[in-house]
Length: 437
Image (cartoon, rainbow, N blue to C red):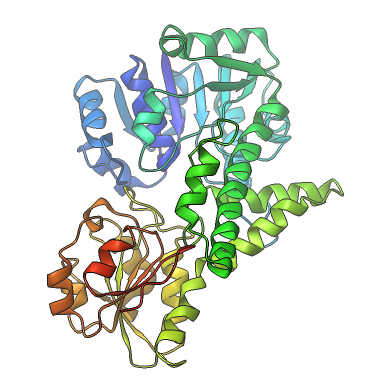
């Protein structure tokens, strides 16, 4: 089948590459000429494990194409996926201007039946708005479908090729049949496709992400309470997760959630509720707790240094909001850097994958190291902000030689407590006892 993907951000590029891998001819449209030219030449504009290999394979197989010309792609395709940004506005509501602008363009350009698929995360009722905009521009029949993505950054290729389920909101039987055909390679292997109305589909995405944000935040609250009463959050987590009604995933405490989805989607669902005179009290609490959790270690750093960190050098391992991605949107590292700089500290950071994105935001406000150990040179303390695999088994002897003080503030609970203790480090993590040497 011929398919157009409008938008080559994280969702659009992974979706387009996956659909090409399933045997479709996919035309990816973006207004950024430089980006499109780069992709034509095999340059993947985002970091995602295993994406480049699949990307290049489908370009070479002539199933994956890139263009800035929406009309050209539209004329070749029966199905149009909208994978456009829906950033939060000042009030937290999702900005649909990109989605509705492209819907308007489609309405003006289409010459035959199309299925328009909302892949972007959008508020309940967006399919109706897209339908209204297109209908105002054309008399040609079309259908609008909701098909939310459930990709985890860092595991997007795995999730896209082996989804737990496919959710499709469609009122039209014709559109359902077309979507079923697209996803037949999945349903043939037992992966369920769940059909529902468009509004339920739209809400499913927000509900799923918001629930996971709540789960993470609840675990962070438990971790903070563990420190008050002397319990160990790692043991509590294992005990809880062994209950199959709860499960082990998303129970890892740390310095809050970030990224492109959870913060934005929680805000948007809160705002959508208010528009219907409904208060998502649990989500409002989740958001407030997460804001505080992201910088919870800064006060601990101040406490260690007697209340004043002016002039102190803090090495920071990790800048991405999570491992295996270059995404720094809503990253806890940035919140901590901002607060530490305001308090007069100096930051030397290491993250080869996310560094260039941080430089675009912070410039030379912080220093950037070429290796994890270079970042430790004469550091007063180490702050671990991202759980990159290379940080899991460091050379503690070398760390001790490099650092001015053997002090670690670990926002991701990277090490069993006995490891820093055996190596003579002060070690402060989340929800566990503090190791004082």
